[in-house]
Image 1: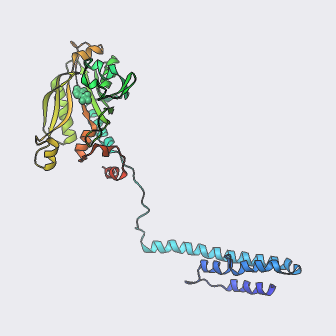
Image 2 (image 1 turned 90 degrees about the vertical axis):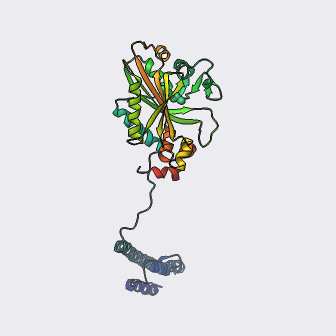
Image 3 (image 1 turned 90 degrees about the horizontal axis):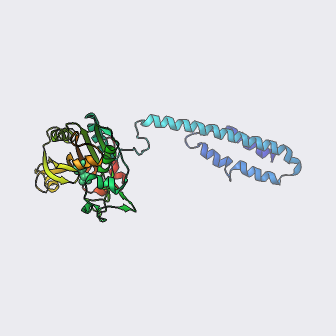
Amino acid sequence: MIAKVANIKSEVEAYQFDENQKAETFRLLYLSKKGIITELFEEFKMAPVEEKRTLGGVLNGLKQLAEAKYQEQKEKEAENNVGDLMAHDITLPVYQTNEGALHPLRIVEDRLLEIFYSLGFDLSEGPEIEDDYHNFGALNFAEDHPARDMQDTFFISEHVLRTHTSSVQVREMEKGKLPLRLVMPGRVYRNEAVSSRSNCFFHQIEGLYIDKGVSFADLKQTLYYFVQQFFGEGTKVRFRSSYFPFTEPSAEMDIWAGVETEENRRLTKGTGWLEVLGCGMVHPNVLKSCDIDPSFYTGFAFGMGIDRITMLKYGITDIRDLFVNDVRMLKQFAGI
Ligand code: DAH
């Protein structure tokens, strides 16, 4: 058997790798489970005891030799592979990764904040779980106002999930520091049937400016500036008189979307005007509830739906698309 091992050793030493005889061919021939060297070890078990001592050493030497030869060739082939790739096309795309993107509501809220910061407004936020007083009472809602109805509001024993961000106005005015110039974004809740146009939670941004001598003209100018910045220079606006318990006078502001396209007509119900927000001069009763003397101070407030203007801006027709977190939708906002 010693002679046989010696033969195979010279065979291994002489083995030439080429296009057809690669490291893997060599491994299969000598080192795999059914390879020649593995079989020699099987034979070794049966060899006479006297032979075993020398044979063991020689056999192990052979195995080491073959393994070293195999390793060396394998490394060479790996290097060549990289070389081959480089020689072909190094501009080939790398593995695809998923790029993160800001949610459209985040993009719009950031933009809104940026515009109002530029006018000297600061940020404030309040709790989503409110009491009846901050959500309704201090805002001049009558005891039996229909908005307090169980059908509109989610109640949690003594508390409510705030139905609007106007509650944050009250929390700020109560602090007793004037003047105030704030924007207050956040999530609000309404107990409504979910559909393409209404969801049981959505987002608003509230504005409040209280100082001596703040007038309706200040309100109009501030909101006009906002529209030009957000919807584009030259966008027409109109103010319609309206009613909110916490403002007097109250108004709603529309922007001109036009009636040129089917899309315009559907959105504006043929009027050309799109409702954007509610606003008004802070009602004296609200100021009084917060210990602010209405004979010295006046203020304006406004509130708008962030979801609504996000949908307008990006042509999203179903509000639920904003909340399902489907990456196919979110991806479209990468890099916007
Ligand atoms: N809170 C009102 C709503 O949810 C929106 C609103 C209207 C806020 C007029 C205001 C305002 O601050 O002055 O429908």
